[in-house]
Length: 155
Image (cartoon, rainbow, N blue to C red; front, side, top):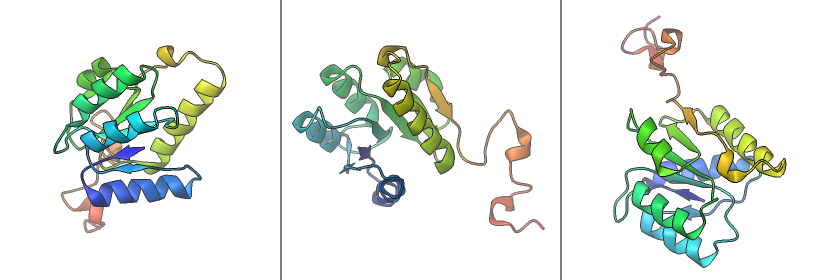
């Protein structure tokens, strides 16, 4: 399930995951995500949920979803920085920052499913953090050169 109140982000991520062979259900906000999950709690294998949404933010939805199924793998998606501690304390498996590095996200999803398939206890899976694509404070080489480097205009 992908829950994001930004229609473009939700649809794009959904299509990318479908292109990789995943069955995807889309939810337009946290309330819809909780409602849809409760209707079919046994059919969701993973939830990707935006942190900041209208009607019910991602964190409130995460707490409600984990009450229904404490072993549900959840990845929080956010455009906000410095959310590591909040995400880790909430009980989610990963924090994924926007803009999303899609190959890294797909690798993290595959790892999540392989850990579960190899009988690793779902409660002992380590928390992961995927920083925003192209921006990592600890590796300056990933930063674009100059203010317009990400558009290729600094050459």
